[in-house]
Image (cartoon, rainbow, N blue to C red; front, side, top):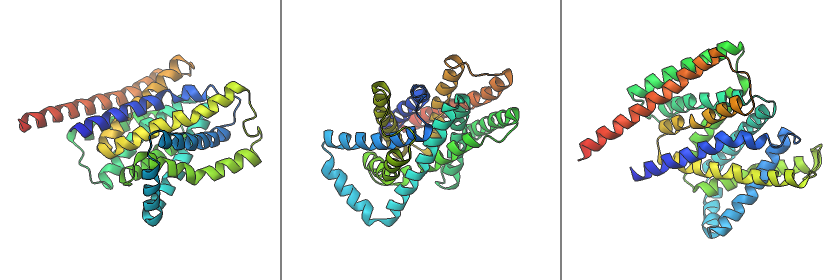
Length: 298
């Protein structure tokens, strides 16, 4: 239970980070979304290497890398994770840069539904009655939002599916979170460097000092929540992790409304109301189950 509490805490902090991260990308209006993605990859790698050196885990890191290189299945899984998170990052950055923070939040509202689906179908995790009710309410809210926009929300769906499968892979890989994330950045970093040096219209780090510093900081704001998420994924069920995720898009939605004044109708509010109700039902169900288990344990 102690590990589960720690996992829930890590999940909460990670999703709070992701909830406020659109504000960070909004500070880079002059940088192309694909460039931001590549800088995010490069500086994440630099940050991870510094993190491993400062925490004196270099020898452990090399030992784990050696194990991964000898295990083709594990290496393939990490490569797949790297590709999935890259697609997720680009879709998210592009959506936010186009002024659609509400759409970005919808992607991460859909994400927990995909998490629950994967958890029940692949991981064979049991869904409680409150969980089933929550899924039904959340699904209804998402369908209402889709109907209101009158089109299939491709960007939110891409974000939801890629991140759910990324999380599923991270849950199954038996390497430390820092090793897994560092290898992921190594896999995609050569492509990012080649693009920035040879193909970027803006050139490599050809910005004013404040923009360059923000691009360097992108590595930190990327790596920290991913480290926390990877740890949380190992310590709690994928269903619980999925519903904790609603923290992120809720913060995104609030920033879209009150910071960026994106249009928001009464119909959208009703649709999101079903999603918020789903979170409340799921939270109550988990608290009830926890108290019940605690009583039986005495």
